[in-house]
Amino acid sequence: MNMTWKTIAPLAVWLALYLVPVPAGLNADQWHYFAIFAAVITGLILESMPVGAVGIIGLTAAGVMGYVEHDPNKSLRWMLGGFSESTVWLIVGAFVFSIGYRKSGLGRRLALLLVHKLGRSTIGLGYAVAFSDLVLAPATPSNTARSGGTVYPIVSNIPRIYGSEPGPTAGKIGTYVMWTAFATTAVTSSLFLTALAPNAAALSIAKKIVGVDVGWSQWFAGFAPLGILLLVVVPLLSYLVCRPEVKESPEIVEWSAGELKAMGPMSRNEQIMSVLVLLAMFLWICGSNPTISLPFLGSNFINPTMVVFVVISLMLVTGVIDFDDIVREKAAWEVFFYFTSLLTLSSGLNEIGFIKWVAEGFAKPLATMSPLTGMILLVSFFFWVHYFFSSITSHTAAVLPVVLAVGTSIPGLSVPTLTLLCVYSLGLMGVISPYATGPAPMYYGSGYIGKGDFWKFGLIFGVIYFAGLLLIVLPWLQMIG
Image 1 (cartoon, rainbow, N blue to C red):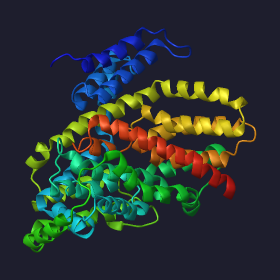
Image 2 (cartoon, rainbow, N blue to C red; image 1 turned 30 degrees about the vertical axis):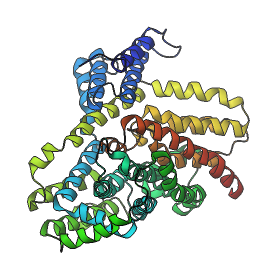
Image 3 (tube, one colour; image 1 turned 90 degrees about the vertical axis):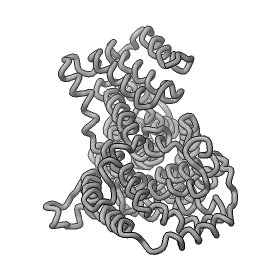
Image 4 (cartoon, rainbow, N blue to C red; image 1 turned 135 degrees about the horizontal axis):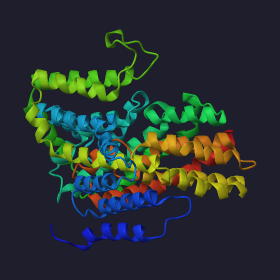
Protein backbone atom coordinates (compact mmCIF):
# COMPACT_ATOMS: atom_id res chain seq x y z
CA MET A 1 0.00 0.00 0.00
CA ASN A 2 1.39 3.41 -0.98
CA MET A 3 1.61 5.95 1.84
CA THR A 4 -0.24 9.14 0.87
CA TRP A 5 -1.53 12.09 2.81
CA LYS A 6 -4.91 10.36 3.00
CA THR A 7 -3.25 7.42 4.70
CA ILE A 8 -1.28 9.59 7.09
CA ALA A 9 -4.16 11.98 7.98
CA PRO A 10 -6.06 9.51 10.26
CA LEU A 11 -2.82 8.74 12.09
CA ALA A 12 -2.16 12.47 12.47
CA VAL A 13 -5.66 13.01 13.91
CA TRP A 14 -5.14 10.15 16.36
CA LEU A 15 -1.71 11.40 17.46
CA ALA A 16 -2.84 15.01 17.83
CA LEU A 17 -5.77 14.04 20.07
CA TYR A 18 -3.68 11.49 21.96
CA LEU A 19 -1.13 14.15 22.87
CA VAL A 20 -3.71 16.74 23.92
CA PRO A 21 -4.07 16.92 27.74
CA VAL A 22 -7.02 14.84 28.92
CA PRO A 23 -10.04 17.17 29.40
CA ALA A 24 -11.47 17.59 32.88
CA GLY A 25 -14.11 14.99 33.65
CA LEU A 26 -12.53 12.26 31.52
CA ASN A 27 -9.82 9.73 32.24
CA ALA A 28 -6.99 8.85 29.85
CA ASP A 29 -8.69 5.71 28.51
CA GLN A 30 -11.85 7.59 27.60
CA TRP A 31 -9.97 10.34 25.77
CA HIS A 32 -7.60 8.01 23.96
CA TYR A 33 -10.55 5.85 22.86
CA PHE A 34 -12.13 8.94 21.35
CA ALA A 35 -8.86 9.64 19.53
CA ILE A 36 -9.14 6.23 17.84
CA PHE A 37 -12.80 6.83 16.95
CA ALA A 38 -11.96 10.24 15.42
CA ALA A 39 -9.14 8.66 13.41
CA VAL A 40 -11.48 5.98 12.06
CA ILE A 41 -14.05 8.57 10.97
CA THR A 42 -11.28 10.57 9.28
CA GLY A 43 -10.19 7.43 7.44
CA LEU A 44 -13.73 6.76 6.27
CA ILE A 45 -14.23 10.31 5.01
CA LEU A 46 -10.90 10.39 3.18
CA GLU A 47 -11.14 6.76 1.97
CA SER A 48 -7.62 6.07 3.22
CA MET A 49 -8.19 2.37 2.49
CA PRO A 50 -11.22 0.08 2.07
CA VAL A 51 -13.87 1.01 4.62
CA GLY A 52 -13.95 -2.47 6.14
CA ALA A 53 -10.20 -2.32 6.74
CA VAL A 54 -10.45 1.09 8.42
CA GLY A 55 -13.10 -0.20 10.81
CA ILE A 56 -11.26 -3.43 11.65
CA ILE A 57 -7.99 -1.59 12.34
CA GLY A 58 -9.69 0.92 14.63
CA LEU A 59 -11.62 -1.80 16.45
CA THR A 60 -8.47 -3.87 16.92
CA ALA A 61 -6.51 -0.92 18.28
CA ALA A 62 -9.23 -0.12 20.82
CA GLY A 63 -9.51 -3.77 21.83
CA VAL A 64 -5.77 -4.38 22.21
CA MET A 65 -5.37 -1.24 24.32
CA GLY A 66 -8.23 -2.36 26.57
CA TYR A 67 -9.91 1.03 26.62
CA VAL A 68 -13.41 -0.41 27.11
CA GLU A 69 -12.53 -3.63 28.96
CA HIS A 70 -9.17 -4.02 30.69
CA ASP A 71 -9.37 -7.81 30.90
CA PRO A 72 -8.04 -9.23 27.57
CA ASN A 73 -10.77 -11.90 27.32
CA LYS A 74 -13.53 -9.40 28.03
CA SER A 75 -11.96 -6.96 25.58
CA LEU A 76 -12.06 -9.61 22.85
CA ARG A 77 -15.70 -10.40 23.62
CA TRP A 78 -16.44 -6.68 23.35
CA MET A 79 -14.69 -6.53 19.96
CA LEU A 80 -16.71 -9.47 18.65
CA GLY A 81 -20.01 -8.33 20.17
CA GLY A 82 -21.04 -6.36 17.11
CA PHE A 83 -20.91 -9.45 14.91
CA SER A 84 -23.99 -10.79 16.68
CA GLU A 85 -26.04 -7.59 16.35
CA SER A 86 -29.34 -8.24 14.59
CA THR A 87 -29.14 -4.99 12.60
CA VAL A 88 -25.86 -6.08 11.02
CA TRP A 89 -27.34 -9.37 9.84
CA LEU A 90 -30.48 -7.61 8.65
CA ILE A 91 -28.28 -5.49 6.37
CA VAL A 92 -26.42 -8.55 5.07
CA GLY A 93 -29.77 -10.27 4.54
CA ALA A 94 -31.01 -7.32 2.51
CA PHE A 95 -28.01 -7.76 0.20
CA VAL A 96 -28.93 -11.44 -0.18
CA PHE A 97 -32.48 -10.38 -1.06
CA SER A 98 -30.91 -8.32 -3.83
CA ILE A 99 -29.26 -11.48 -5.16
CA GLY A 100 -32.67 -13.14 -5.33
CA TYR A 101 -34.21 -10.17 -7.14
CA ARG A 102 -31.30 -10.04 -9.55
CA LYS A 103 -30.82 -13.76 -10.23
CA SER A 104 -34.52 -14.58 -10.58
CA GLY A 105 -35.08 -11.62 -12.93
CA LEU A 106 -37.81 -10.16 -10.71
CA GLY A 107 -35.78 -7.06 -9.93
CA ARG A 108 -35.20 -6.33 -13.59
CA ARG A 109 -38.89 -6.89 -14.40
CA LEU A 110 -40.05 -4.50 -11.66
CA ALA A 111 -37.43 -1.93 -12.67
CA LEU A 112 -38.53 -2.15 -16.32
CA LEU A 113 -42.15 -1.66 -15.23
CA LEU A 114 -41.23 1.48 -13.28
CA VAL A 115 -39.16 2.79 -16.18
CA HIS A 116 -41.94 2.04 -18.66
CA LYS A 117 -44.53 3.91 -16.60
CA LEU A 118 -42.45 6.84 -15.30
CA GLY A 119 -39.06 6.69 -16.98
CA ARG A 120 -39.66 9.35 -19.62
CA SER A 121 -38.07 11.87 -17.23
CA THR A 122 -35.47 11.37 -14.53
CA ILE A 123 -37.58 13.41 -12.11
CA GLY A 124 -40.48 11.06 -12.71
CA LEU A 125 -38.32 8.12 -11.71
CA GLY A 126 -37.29 9.98 -8.56
CA TYR A 127 -40.92 10.42 -7.52
CA ALA A 128 -41.66 6.77 -8.30
CA VAL A 129 -38.82 5.72 -5.99
CA ALA A 130 -39.98 8.08 -3.23
CA PHE A 131 -43.59 6.90 -3.53
CA SER A 132 -42.49 3.26 -3.21
CA ASP A 133 -41.00 3.95 0.22
CA LEU A 134 -43.94 6.11 1.31
CA VAL A 135 -46.46 3.33 0.59
CA LEU A 136 -44.56 0.83 2.73
CA ALA A 137 -43.55 3.17 5.56
CA PRO A 138 -46.65 3.31 7.83
CA ALA A 139 -46.67 -0.45 8.35
CA THR A 140 -42.94 -1.33 8.27
CA PRO A 141 -41.23 -0.40 11.56
CA SER A 142 -37.79 -1.38 10.29
CA ASN A 143 -36.43 1.10 7.77
CA THR A 144 -33.67 -1.41 7.00
CA ALA A 145 -36.28 -3.98 6.03
CA ARG A 146 -38.30 -1.40 4.12
CA SER A 147 -35.60 0.49 2.26
CA GLY A 148 -32.79 -2.06 2.35
CA GLY A 149 -34.82 -5.23 1.88
CA THR A 150 -37.61 -4.06 -0.42
CA VAL A 151 -36.87 -0.73 -2.14
CA TYR A 152 -33.11 -1.06 -2.66
CA PRO A 153 -33.17 -4.39 -4.56
CA ILE A 154 -35.66 -2.93 -7.04
CA VAL A 155 -34.18 0.54 -7.58
CA SER A 156 -30.64 -0.84 -7.87
CA ASN A 157 -31.74 -2.43 -11.14
CA ILE A 158 -32.97 0.85 -12.65
CA PRO A 159 -29.61 2.56 -13.38
CA ARG A 160 -28.31 -0.40 -15.40
CA ILE A 161 -31.23 -0.01 -17.79
CA TYR A 162 -29.81 3.42 -18.62
CA GLY A 163 -26.26 2.14 -18.92
CA SER A 164 -25.35 3.57 -15.53
CA GLU A 165 -23.12 1.19 -13.57
CA PRO A 166 -21.28 1.59 -10.25
CA GLY A 167 -18.13 3.59 -10.82
CA PRO A 168 -17.42 5.97 -13.74
CA THR A 169 -20.96 5.88 -15.20
CA ALA A 170 -22.79 6.12 -11.85
CA GLY A 171 -23.46 9.81 -12.41
CA LYS A 172 -25.59 9.21 -15.51
CA ILE A 173 -28.61 8.42 -13.35
CA GLY A 174 -27.57 5.86 -10.71
CA THR A 175 -26.35 8.37 -8.11
CA TYR A 176 -29.61 10.30 -8.36
CA VAL A 177 -31.90 7.28 -8.09
CA MET A 178 -30.03 5.74 -5.17
CA TRP A 179 -29.66 8.97 -3.20
CA THR A 180 -33.34 9.81 -3.69
CA ALA A 181 -34.28 6.40 -2.27
CA PHE A 182 -32.02 6.86 0.74
CA ALA A 183 -32.98 10.47 1.46
CA THR A 184 -36.67 9.60 1.22
CA THR A 185 -36.54 6.82 3.80
CA ALA A 186 -35.15 9.31 6.32
CA VAL A 187 -38.26 11.44 5.82
CA THR A 188 -40.79 8.61 5.95
CA SER A 189 -39.08 7.27 9.09
CA SER A 190 -39.99 10.52 10.84
CA LEU A 191 -43.40 11.01 9.23
CA PHE A 192 -44.99 7.94 10.81
CA LEU A 193 -44.65 6.70 14.37
CA THR A 194 -44.65 3.14 13.06
CA ALA A 195 -42.04 3.68 10.31
CA LEU A 196 -38.99 3.40 12.59
CA ALA A 197 -38.63 1.14 15.62
CA PRO A 198 -36.74 3.69 17.81
CA ASN A 199 -39.68 6.11 17.48
CA ALA A 200 -41.76 4.05 19.90
CA ALA A 201 -38.77 3.50 22.18
CA ALA A 202 -38.16 7.25 22.32
CA LEU A 203 -41.77 7.93 23.27
CA SER A 204 -41.56 5.30 25.99
CA ILE A 205 -38.52 7.07 27.45
CA ALA A 206 -40.25 10.45 27.21
CA LYS A 207 -43.34 9.15 28.98
CA LYS A 208 -41.29 7.81 31.88
CA ILE A 209 -39.05 10.86 32.26
CA VAL A 210 -41.32 13.84 31.53
CA GLY A 211 -44.81 12.32 31.25
CA VAL A 212 -45.27 13.18 27.56
CA ASP A 213 -47.46 10.66 25.73
CA VAL A 214 -48.05 10.90 21.97
CA GLY A 215 -50.41 8.82 19.81
CA TRP A 216 -50.07 7.83 16.15
CA SER A 217 -52.34 10.58 14.78
CA GLN A 218 -50.82 13.28 17.01
CA TRP A 219 -47.36 12.23 15.84
CA PHE A 220 -48.38 12.47 12.18
CA ALA A 221 -50.20 15.79 12.60
CA GLY A 222 -47.19 17.40 14.27
CA PHE A 223 -44.70 16.40 11.58
CA ALA A 224 -46.95 16.45 8.49
CA PRO A 225 -46.26 20.07 7.42
CA LEU A 226 -42.55 19.31 7.07
CA GLY A 227 -42.84 15.64 6.13
CA ILE A 228 -45.22 16.17 3.22
CA LEU A 229 -43.21 19.14 1.98
CA LEU A 230 -39.99 17.10 2.04
CA LEU A 231 -41.60 14.20 0.18
CA VAL A 232 -42.49 16.67 -2.55
CA VAL A 233 -39.09 18.39 -2.74
CA VAL A 234 -36.60 15.57 -1.98
CA PRO A 235 -36.58 14.24 -5.58
CA LEU A 236 -36.07 17.82 -6.78
CA LEU A 237 -33.33 18.55 -4.24
CA SER A 238 -31.60 15.29 -5.13
CA TYR A 239 -31.80 16.27 -8.79
CA LEU A 240 -30.05 19.58 -8.04
CA VAL A 241 -27.41 18.05 -5.77
CA CYS A 242 -26.65 14.88 -7.76
CA ARG A 243 -26.96 16.52 -11.22
CA PRO A 244 -27.78 13.37 -13.23
CA GLU A 245 -26.51 13.39 -16.80
CA VAL A 246 -29.66 11.75 -18.16
CA LYS A 247 -32.51 14.29 -18.02
CA GLU A 248 -35.13 12.75 -20.29
CA SER A 249 -35.12 9.48 -22.14
CA PRO A 250 -38.32 8.74 -24.10
CA GLU A 251 -36.50 6.11 -26.15
CA ILE A 252 -35.78 4.15 -22.95
CA VAL A 253 -39.53 3.98 -22.27
CA GLU A 254 -40.13 2.43 -25.67
CA TRP A 255 -37.15 0.12 -25.26
CA SER A 256 -38.35 -1.04 -21.82
CA ALA A 257 -41.71 -2.06 -23.33
CA GLY A 258 -39.86 -4.24 -25.83
CA GLU A 259 -37.70 -5.74 -23.07
CA LEU A 260 -40.75 -6.59 -20.98
CA LYS A 261 -42.31 -8.28 -23.99
CA ALA A 262 -39.10 -10.21 -24.62
CA MET A 263 -39.01 -11.39 -21.01
CA GLY A 264 -42.38 -13.01 -21.50
CA PRO A 265 -44.44 -14.35 -18.61
CA MET A 266 -42.93 -14.60 -15.13
CA SER A 267 -40.56 -17.52 -14.71
CA ARG A 268 -40.80 -20.08 -11.92
CA ASN A 269 -38.07 -18.35 -9.90
CA GLU A 270 -39.69 -14.94 -10.38
CA GLN A 271 -42.97 -16.31 -9.08
CA ILE A 272 -41.28 -17.91 -6.08
CA MET A 273 -39.31 -14.74 -5.35
CA SER A 274 -42.53 -12.69 -5.55
CA VAL A 275 -44.19 -14.96 -3.00
CA LEU A 276 -41.17 -14.80 -0.70
CA VAL A 277 -41.06 -10.98 -0.89
CA LEU A 278 -44.75 -10.80 -0.01
CA LEU A 279 -44.15 -13.25 2.85
CA ALA A 280 -41.30 -11.09 4.16
CA MET A 281 -43.42 -7.94 4.01
CA PHE A 282 -46.32 -9.70 5.73
CA LEU A 283 -44.07 -10.91 8.56
CA TRP A 284 -42.31 -7.55 8.87
CA ILE A 285 -45.64 -5.77 9.17
CA CYS A 286 -47.68 -8.26 11.20
CA GLY A 287 -44.92 -10.03 13.10
CA SER A 288 -43.83 -6.80 14.79
CA ASN A 289 -47.35 -5.69 15.72
CA PRO A 290 -48.35 -7.03 19.15
CA THR A 291 -52.04 -6.48 18.38
CA ILE A 292 -51.96 -9.02 15.52
CA SER A 293 -51.94 -12.68 16.50
CA LEU A 294 -49.88 -15.07 14.38
CA PRO A 295 -50.41 -18.47 16.06
CA PHE A 296 -48.18 -20.35 13.58
CA LEU A 297 -45.18 -18.37 14.90
CA GLY A 298 -45.57 -19.70 18.42
CA SER A 299 -45.71 -16.08 19.65
CA ASN A 300 -47.06 -12.71 18.56
CA PHE A 301 -43.64 -11.39 17.58
CA ILE A 302 -40.93 -12.25 15.08
CA ASN A 303 -37.77 -10.19 14.83
CA PRO A 304 -37.24 -8.53 11.40
CA THR A 305 -33.83 -10.19 11.16
CA MET A 306 -35.37 -13.59 11.82
CA VAL A 307 -37.70 -12.92 8.88
CA VAL A 308 -34.63 -12.41 6.70
CA PHE A 309 -33.15 -15.75 7.74
CA VAL A 310 -36.47 -17.50 7.09
CA VAL A 311 -36.76 -16.06 3.58
CA ILE A 312 -33.09 -16.69 2.73
CA SER A 313 -33.52 -20.33 3.81
CA LEU A 314 -36.56 -20.64 1.55
CA MET A 315 -34.64 -19.03 -1.31
CA LEU A 316 -31.93 -21.66 -0.88
CA VAL A 317 -34.37 -24.56 -0.57
CA THR A 318 -36.31 -23.54 -3.68
CA GLY A 319 -33.16 -22.92 -5.72
CA VAL A 320 -33.78 -19.21 -6.31
CA ILE A 321 -30.21 -18.65 -5.13
CA ASP A 322 -27.25 -20.89 -4.33
CA PHE A 323 -25.02 -20.65 -1.28
CA ASP A 324 -22.12 -19.76 -3.60
CA ASP A 325 -24.09 -16.66 -4.60
CA ILE A 326 -24.08 -15.51 -0.98
CA VAL A 327 -20.37 -16.20 -0.55
CA ARG A 328 -19.54 -14.26 -3.73
CA GLU A 329 -21.56 -11.17 -2.72
CA LYS A 330 -18.52 -8.99 -2.01
CA ALA A 331 -20.52 -5.83 -1.22
CA ALA A 332 -22.44 -7.60 1.55
CA TRP A 333 -19.32 -8.78 3.35
CA GLU A 334 -17.54 -5.45 2.95
CA VAL A 335 -20.50 -3.72 4.57
CA PHE A 336 -20.65 -6.48 7.20
CA PHE A 337 -17.11 -5.78 8.46
CA TYR A 338 -17.39 -2.01 8.06
CA PHE A 339 -20.72 -1.57 9.81
CA THR A 340 -19.97 -4.12 12.54
CA SER A 341 -16.77 -2.25 13.41
CA LEU A 342 -18.48 1.14 13.42
CA LEU A 343 -21.43 -0.14 15.44
CA THR A 344 -19.10 -1.55 18.09
CA LEU A 345 -16.84 1.51 18.17
CA SER A 346 -19.71 3.99 18.45
CA SER A 347 -21.40 1.87 21.13
CA GLY A 348 -18.09 1.91 22.99
CA LEU A 349 -18.24 5.71 23.22
CA ASN A 350 -21.44 5.33 25.18
CA GLU A 351 -20.23 2.39 27.27
CA ILE A 352 -17.15 4.22 28.56
CA GLY A 353 -19.18 7.32 29.46
CA PHE A 354 -17.82 9.65 26.77
CA ILE A 355 -21.27 10.49 25.37
CA LYS A 356 -22.62 11.26 28.84
CA TRP A 357 -19.66 13.58 29.44
CA VAL A 358 -20.29 15.41 26.15
CA ALA A 359 -24.04 15.64 26.78
CA GLU A 360 -23.75 16.95 30.31
CA GLY A 361 -20.97 19.37 29.40
CA PHE A 362 -23.06 20.83 26.59
CA ALA A 363 -26.38 20.81 28.40
CA LYS A 364 -25.65 22.22 31.86
CA PRO A 365 -24.92 25.81 30.75
CA LEU A 366 -28.28 25.92 28.95
CA ALA A 367 -30.25 26.01 32.20
CA THR A 368 -29.70 29.77 32.48
CA MET A 369 -30.76 30.58 28.89
CA SER A 370 -34.10 31.72 27.50
CA PRO A 371 -36.60 28.93 26.74
CA LEU A 372 -36.40 29.35 22.95
CA THR A 373 -32.60 29.53 22.86
CA GLY A 374 -32.30 26.58 25.19
CA MET A 375 -34.72 24.50 23.12
CA ILE A 376 -32.92 25.25 19.83
CA LEU A 377 -29.53 24.40 21.30
CA LEU A 378 -30.80 21.19 22.91
CA VAL A 379 -32.40 20.00 19.67
CA SER A 380 -29.26 20.99 17.75
CA PHE A 381 -27.13 18.93 20.09
CA PHE A 382 -29.51 15.96 19.95
CA PHE A 383 -29.51 15.98 16.13
CA TRP A 384 -25.85 16.54 15.31
CA VAL A 385 -24.34 14.39 18.06
CA HIS A 386 -25.60 11.47 15.96
CA TYR A 387 -22.27 11.60 14.12
CA PHE A 388 -21.01 9.69 17.18
CA PHE A 389 -23.56 6.90 16.75
CA SER A 390 -24.22 4.08 14.29
CA SER A 391 -27.49 3.14 15.96
CA ILE A 392 -30.51 5.40 16.36
CA THR A 393 -31.73 3.16 19.19
CA SER A 394 -28.53 3.55 21.22
CA HIS A 395 -28.51 7.28 20.48
CA THR A 396 -32.04 7.54 21.83
CA ALA A 397 -31.25 5.59 24.99
CA ALA A 398 -28.04 7.52 25.71
CA VAL A 399 -28.88 11.12 24.82
CA LEU A 400 -32.67 11.64 25.00
CA PRO A 401 -32.91 11.27 28.82
CA VAL A 402 -30.15 13.87 29.30
CA VAL A 403 -31.71 16.36 26.86
CA LEU A 404 -35.19 16.01 28.39
CA ALA A 405 -33.84 16.31 31.94
CA VAL A 406 -32.01 19.54 31.07
CA GLY A 407 -35.11 20.83 29.26
CA THR A 408 -37.19 20.51 32.41
CA SER A 409 -34.66 22.65 34.28
CA ILE A 410 -35.13 25.64 31.93
CA PRO A 411 -37.98 27.83 33.23
CA GLY A 412 -40.73 28.38 30.66
CA LEU A 413 -39.50 25.76 28.17
CA SER A 414 -42.27 23.64 26.64
CA VAL A 415 -41.20 20.09 27.39
CA PRO A 416 -43.82 18.50 25.07
CA THR A 417 -42.51 20.61 22.18
CA LEU A 418 -38.90 19.73 22.99
CA THR A 419 -39.85 16.06 23.16
CA LEU A 420 -41.57 16.08 19.78
CA LEU A 421 -38.71 17.94 18.08
CA CYS A 422 -36.25 15.36 19.40
CA VAL A 423 -38.29 12.30 18.45
CA TYR A 424 -39.14 13.74 15.03
CA SER A 425 -35.42 14.13 14.35
CA LEU A 426 -34.70 10.41 14.79
CA GLY A 427 -35.56 9.45 11.22
CA LEU A 428 -34.16 12.63 9.67
CA MET A 429 -30.74 12.28 11.31
CA GLY A 430 -30.30 8.95 9.52
CA VAL A 431 -29.29 10.85 6.38
CA ILE A 432 -26.15 12.48 7.76
CA SER A 433 -23.56 9.69 7.53
CA PRO A 434 -22.87 6.28 5.93
CA TYR A 435 -23.48 4.57 9.28
CA ALA A 436 -26.26 6.73 10.75
CA THR A 437 -29.09 4.25 10.14
CA GLY A 438 -29.62 0.67 8.98
CA PRO A 439 -30.05 1.22 5.21
CA ALA A 440 -27.11 3.68 5.00
CA PRO A 441 -24.34 1.08 4.62
CA MET A 442 -26.21 -0.54 1.70
CA TYR A 443 -26.45 2.67 -0.31
CA TYR A 444 -22.92 3.62 0.74
CA GLY A 445 -21.60 0.30 -0.50
CA SER A 446 -23.64 0.21 -3.70
CA GLY A 447 -20.93 1.90 -5.75
CA TYR A 448 -23.40 4.45 -7.14
CA ILE A 449 -22.72 7.18 -4.59
CA GLY A 450 -19.09 8.20 -4.26
CA LYS A 451 -17.74 7.74 -0.74
CA GLY A 452 -16.84 11.42 -0.43
CA ASP A 453 -20.13 12.45 -2.06
CA PHE A 454 -22.08 10.45 0.51
CA TRP A 455 -20.66 12.55 3.34
CA LYS A 456 -21.22 15.76 1.36
CA PHE A 457 -24.80 14.91 0.39
CA GLY A 458 -25.49 13.79 3.95
CA LEU A 459 -24.36 17.13 5.35
CA ILE A 460 -26.38 19.12 2.79
CA PHE A 461 -29.58 17.17 3.39
CA GLY A 462 -28.94 17.05 7.14
CA VAL A 463 -28.79 20.84 7.24
CA ILE A 464 -31.97 21.11 5.15
CA TYR A 465 -33.86 18.58 7.28
CA PHE A 466 -32.69 20.19 10.52
CA ALA A 467 -33.60 23.67 9.29
CA GLY A 468 -37.07 22.34 8.48
CA LEU A 469 -37.46 21.14 12.08
CA LEU A 470 -36.69 24.59 13.46
CA LEU A 471 -38.36 26.76 10.81
CA ILE A 472 -41.50 24.72 10.12
CA VAL A 473 -42.15 22.13 12.82
CA LEU A 474 -41.23 24.30 15.83
CA PRO A 475 -43.61 27.21 14.94
CA TRP A 476 -46.31 24.68 13.95
CA LEU A 477 -46.09 22.89 17.30
CA GLN A 478 -46.19 26.20 19.15
CA MET A 479 -49.28 27.19 17.19
CA ILE A 480 -51.25 23.96 17.70
CA GLY A 481 -49.97 23.43 21.24
